[in-house]
Image 1 (cartoon, one colour):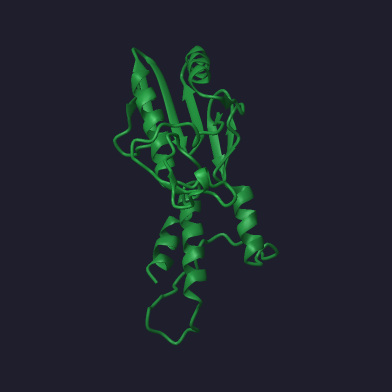
Image 2 (cartoon, one colour):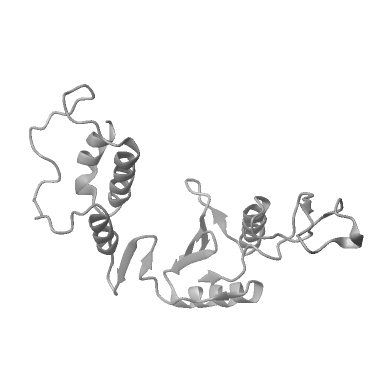
Length: 209
């Protein structure tokens, strides 16, 4: 589900003052400032106000926050489990019972203005295929975009993720590389290890340099 205008209309816990906008001078005094009572886009307090409001509401609904990730919430009622993940203004949720998910959706729509996007198929570069027995995750679309970005989409595939017998060193005669580009490529590969654990060892090695 996608929350509409999540960063707007949330109460601010702190006093915030903004300059008057050009062409909108109150009382003909340009030295006056405005104090917003509600959150606005662009304020650093705005995301915090949204998360505070959502976190408070979810706890009222009986959710507990995950110990490893602050954006993971869990609700257990006997053998019924409801899990949800929050990413900015998007919420992914699932349960082992369909009626629990439907009830949660109805409750959330009463509190927040939101739209339901249906069954999860794509999220943050992850492709999700769901069926009765299992869930399959892949990053084919993301990987194709990366290959195209670095001009590698026409290269032939190989079986091994890294050349065997290759010894890397920080002090050798190899050509100097552009460090920001290299670090970007390593970051991309690290994100791919979420669905491709077979490349984790190779990525870990090249990440050292």
